[in-house]
Image (cartoon, rainbow, N blue to C red; front, top):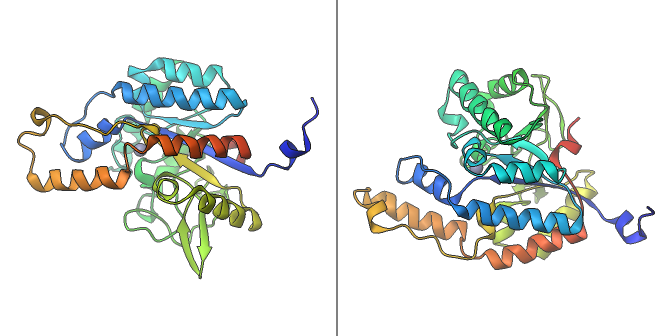
Length: 291
Ligand SMILES: [Zn+2]
């Protein structure tokens, strides 16, 4: 079928989702325990899949093994609808906190559950909190050994908690032999700034996101966008008194700040933004950029 001129001219954008449940991350980071995912992840991931299906576009879904185990229907649907499948670990342990053997075990557990849910091919990996840095580049060797074709975890900028400042902005083959598709940063006034996902989209008008995408295209780069299903949630998170009883008050204060920072409950605005990105761009899975 011939493409319309508008469709042919649409600029390219790689779209990805780290499929995890908001409550799981909070329970692990602030309450110090692992919990099963809730229907929050089912509802919001289903909405994302509906949107992509409506526009006939394909993206990458980096699943937590734990989510695949509890909601195999999400993996099955993503596979059936032609999306690319990746792994985001099993229970969201951070790469920065693991040694190589622990990392391998975490990824293997995640992959096993994603396969059991119905994915034949697991093409890529996205590290929890982008936590692959200069200190743990051995993670790339492990991923290669596990048959993963590409990684998309490295932020080429100086972040407080993540990033490798001098990493190239364009995708390429790493020394480990696996492809790396770095997250997008734009250069403004000589500084490299992240822009194409999560809070960078939540807190700025969509016009800013488009401006950044244009800058990346001008530099010969395809924007790599990342989101989490919970960013499209409109209800405010609630943790019962029973759940937070006995938790250090300082941790609860940090949790309140985290909730605010994550902007949970602003899902309606985020849904509109994602609808426009999906409508206006030539959406590709992250693996399409792997070289
Ligand atoms: Zn994550």
